[in-house]
Length: 272
Image 1 (cartoon, one colour):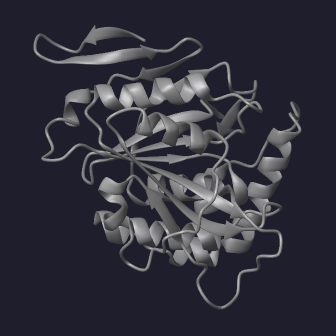
Image 2: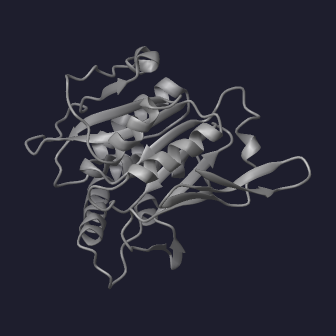
Image 3: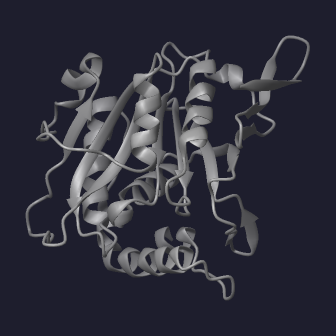
């Protein structure tokens, strides 16, 4: 792993690029020492396009509601050649955001990984987290269940983590899940946490793999906000549930099939 440092001024240096074998984290003109000025290291929340698009929905909602600012992006050969744009402006598909007020970093990847990859990418991202003294890393995942249907009751939220933080996340109605296996990008991130000095955790909720699950994402956001003490409102997300399902499903189908023509409906439109 190599680091390229770019001096911000005489006293402050920020890692401009953090490189792995086939991936790297690129930080924009941003003072990384902001992470160190808080009493605690930042919470790191990672959202991917998994079952029910839980991670993508949660990450987007946090970015919007907490007014987070983009601080960088992640490049990797594990990502397919897909470009996103919002209101005509091109965006990296794998971005990093930070809230100074709530000391939270959110990583969002809006395209699926190439099958069977993500080892180097997860190692690079977690090494970057270690470099900045981050401790708690949260992943989000839907539990595939084609028979699951959202009822009037809230879907259950399960939490699994290393022993050091399991008691913390098993509060506010989060349940201990039965034995199981995680696969995919989230599993790769959590394995890197297990191999390093990072406290990895995953929040899960049942979701039909054929459809986006904003209701499940909403209940996970609520639990994380209660545990880590930051404000969140669910009214807009739940009110726009049907539109979110329709548009995110369209985006997931386009990216999975690798369509290269025709504009995709941007996520940002879903929250306005």
